Length: 348
Image 1 (tube, rainbow, N blue to C red):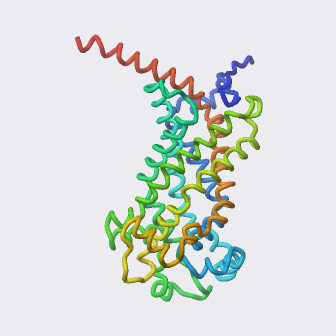
Image 2: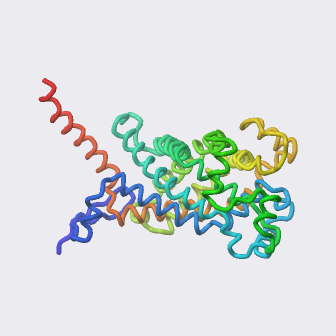
Image 3: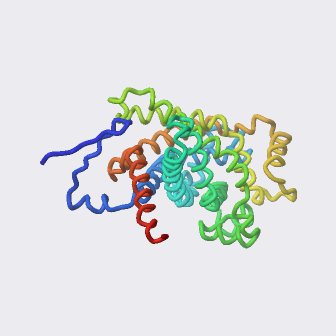
């Protein structure tokens, strides 16, 4: 059977022939394919790095963990909570990251095509990736932030001894019974505003982080010879550096966000007042170095997480036969012209 193959700028081959089994995939709308690819990429990457994510959150929000160091923190969790302790809050994390990543990648592609189609004067280089990535990150955060808040609250909880029962935990750590309990109690205590506490620094951080992440990833790939762009190790390397550089510039805002999310669990009578108030309080009480608390762990987490995310996403796009961006833009323009043509007679 002859095959008709076309290559996109990343050197990825797309087989245009289909089998009956592939008909379902071919019949899916483009945005649905991108949602699926992004959701799978986010879920796989987040699950792999879940233990590092748990320790990082404890570093950011609990001085007792920050003071004992990385290895001792791992030993403490293993001793008191077992293997499950490393995945505490991961259910909420995956429940959040799947729709978040799906929206993030899909919105990025949509914004990218919209800019290329409607503002051709901007070109199609990494600067457009910076803009599209920033907008897509903000869009995804606004839709999924309550899930991130719940994930952080669940991960913040620490059971000091294996024999500690739920009643004792409730009195000492305000323990939540799960995702639904955390949602309902947070909403009951503070309403919708409670579910979005800390969203401001999230948006401040996600706009530059998401934009820089896509910018560096696409910029580095543009310098890779076409024959090597489809190589998985190349994608992993580009994704690693992109995540590393993007996170370095925005990490202090991530610390502020975590502190705002768990402030009600500290048992303190004083309430933090917004992003700047939280930032000032952290510096006054903990010192400016605390703004980078857990950054070394985050490096260990970000490198595989972003690298795996980009690699799985690109792989899923090939599997789902997502067309090259240039072809999708041409189809978008064609559909727009056809729509205008069909609606013109009825308006006369």
